[in-house]
Image (cartoon, rainbow, N blue to C red):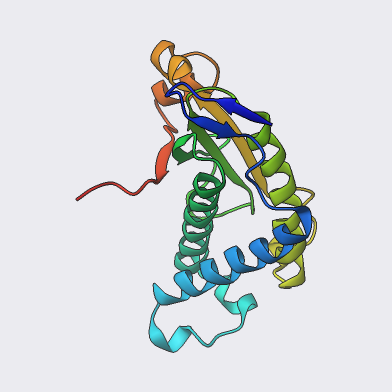
Length: 182
């Protein structure tokens, strides 16, 4: 279904791939994030198995950040209306040294989109399936991995709904896409 966006251009709400492609996309996202995370640790540790790497705080943190960044890039590629993507923690009480295996992303858009909701849910299923196949114990009992929420410019401006998170004291969302200009 084609619609006109606020800039007067056509906006195709069904830009995302077919479900069978999402399995390949999830595989690529996870494998690339794994490579990115390994590149950030000491060269002697890079050949260690995933179980041992998963016990290292710096590796887990690097993997989570790489996966967030890769997912954000993919969402922006599929949906041209995506202006920015932020990661957020569900609770400010979460320990910075442990990761429960979940990824929470806020997608800044000019208007809410059902396509982004559909993509988020479908990608979550594919990612979870692949992460379980990797054999990493932190994902074996999970029912979901990825949460994608949308936030509009108006919500940000008025500090309502998910826009209120940007005024939080303890856990302000952090931009993961597009990268900050230097």
